[in-house]
Length: 111
Image: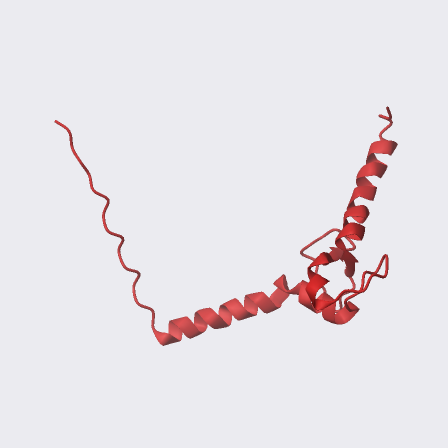
């Protein structure tokens, strides 16, 4: 005898009061202000220019400008921007590949 099961219809989420919604929005805004928008803050502090090669960026190319954390810790985001430098994607890639190359060459495993 074969049994056939139909999936149950999803239960509707309980309706939230306006107070709950307002509190949720306040919490989300606070979380977004607490450090996840360090790119915008760094762009305001340091300008739209690569700190390494000096290339200047416009609004249509701004996506090519990244924020490099000098100490390598992406969670260390001081408000004064002392751990950030704006680097174009090419200089940022170069900055990170230098340590890899240095580690490789100092390991003694040269070809």
